Length: 239
Image: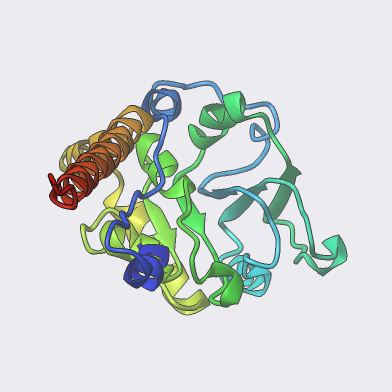
């Protein structure tokens, strides 16, 4: 939505499509009971993140959360790119597990209590639309995020994600998420919203817009040709 709002003035036919999600794939996390081997020895509660770890991640805040809550374990999944790995905070309760296969993510998610998106608020995150938001929700996980525009609206506004601006607020939001858990009503609301974000639904809507644009152009071309023909006929004089 942030990118749409910034660019929609350039053309009258600009449309917003939020990140889609393979709901069925990530919903597997709700039924998995066996812990992934890498997580078996990590005590709970676990707060997890899965995604690229780069300049868009507020690593300082991760370190502060770990310091404030030593009883929590922060599980970080994803490759470290574009930043020095030596700058990552180290603590007994921070676990950098590296990159994992897409097909195994539900197995990791199944062992988390809360999912987080500790994005830094900078130019690199101004127009991001994190695909992990609907992925976490599909897995049945409470979500806590910094105020990224495309997370605040719609997920924060709909009560499907908690928004926190700093480490203190992040800790409070995670604590609240742990206490509240995943009620049936919350999951039903999340699932209802996620139905609109399937890749099939996204493709169908895009295809309709493209087909409509083609049809409009064809009608205009036909009309222009008709006008041109009439003008040519009007220019013929019989002597």
